[in-house]
Length: 237
Image (cartoon, rainbow, N blue to C red; front, top):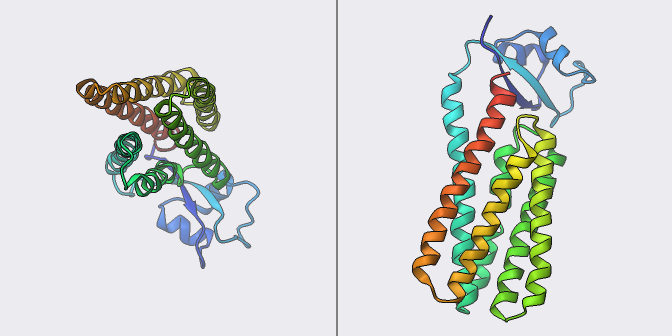
């Protein structure tokens, strides 16, 4: 059997099923079969097509490596900018707002890795949930800094609920993802961030650095898990 890896092609101007079949080394009937409801004689620009690419495509190993690198970079950048924002907020630095704006780019960076695999609606929902994750983290940091324990506890409950929502969205989109495993990893990430915030407030700087390293390693494990799920669903089917 010829090697088949499922990709998602976004329809461009002048695309036809015949040209796509030639480009991806497959057949028109196969594309039609995998995209029921798409009119081959009236394709709309922006439509997403599932295509089983043929054997002559570029080696999937390169794609797998690039995907994993993109996923790891997006999540580790999240950890890095969250640490910088925490430092700026707790120390009332002048760059706090500028760092916050850069931190808020991370949701789109992470969601962009999923963009070529899933619908725009799903990617937008993931972006919104990740934005909520960061917003709540910032509000928890502010409440902790100001000694507002009750407010911090309430925000923390929302934070963990947000993690449940992220795990549910991803596991619903990809049967290769376990909701329980995703929730475990996301919850661990929140636990370590909270410990990192506490260490910073208590000026336990060595502990804060160690927790950051641990958090970064855990996020790389999460990135690898997410990558493997995408590969299993789309590249190795």
